[in-house]
Amino acid sequence: MFDHIERFYRPTTLREALLLLRKVGKRGRIVAGATDIVTQADRSTRFLIDITRLGLNFVRGGNRECVIGATTTMAELEHSPVIRALAGGILAKAAATCGSIQNRNMATVGGNLANASPAADTASVLLALDVQVVLASSRRERKIALAEFYSGPHQNTLNGDMLTEIVIPALPSGGRLGWSFQKLGRTETDISLVNVAAGLQADARGRIKWARLALGAVGPTPLRARNAKELLLGNALNEDLLTRVSEAVMKEISPISDSRASAEYRREMSAVLARRALRECAAQAGYKL
Ligand SMILES: Cc1cc2nc3c(=O)[nH]c(=O)nc-3n(C[C@H](O)[C@H](O)[C@H](O)COP(=O)(O)OP(=O)(O)OC[C@H]3O[C@@H](n4cnc5c(N)ncnc54)[C@H](O)[C@@H]3O)c2cc1C
Image (cartoon, rainbow, N blue to C red; front, side, top):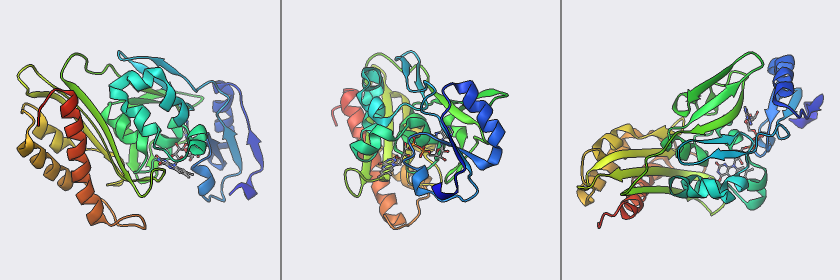
């Protein structure tokens, strides 16, 4: 793909980058860490716009609201004290699984979302955290829920805009709260065959009052298991409920067979990982299963 590049731009301000994007139009493409783009062939691309010098690698705020800049790398997320302290550290954990250390030093969280792979590891966590993404062009800025950002495998609603920030809303606080990120890959540094992000909070009587369950690599986009979540709400977590929830998860997903795994294996493993994730949440929330 790089054989056909006429010009590689390295803007130093967001405004400059957005004006360049407008100027080059459909023949231009954003490049951040380049760990996905190098594997893709697209002869129509003539201009690359490097966005790693725009000052978009930051983590601001904390539990009440946290904003992450799009070019923050996986390694930065993995080591950020704020991200490690947020939501039981599940975003830091997911970032820490994104390939080798060399990959994580380059790969950005914005690139992980913009590439729109169904298997992107930070995507399921960010879905579980109900984040919004900020999308900008030289003419407008919009903020949409990550759940609305995906439109299919490797398809999103960017429409030529740049993803500039990820906004994590205030998360539940107080007691009886648990979080988990689970990933199954062929090796430690491989892309997910299945991944699961979960969070739950129980009330004083042990009934679940808040829950999130999101999965990756088992559908055309990263997805939220809404039926499974509904089963959890209002109930006390026990083995019977875990069984019903993992069965609901298997029905909600639509995995495909590919060179990495069969659809059947992915479906079975989704139930296993969802159960494992909820058990980890349950232990943190004080359940004795
Ligand atoms: C060896 C290897 C192992 C990997 N392992 C994993 C893994 O385990 N888990 C995982 O999730 N991923 C994995 N990946 C994929 C990749 O590293 C991640 O998806 C990474 O986060 C992509 O970010 P990037 O900055 O490198 O994106 P780039 O390659 O720079 O860009 C990817 C795409 O997103 C667009 N883009 C980038 N940033 C923006 C933005 N801010 N706004 C709009 N568009 C943008 C680009 O135009 C391009 O289309 C792996 C990749 C490799 C090569």
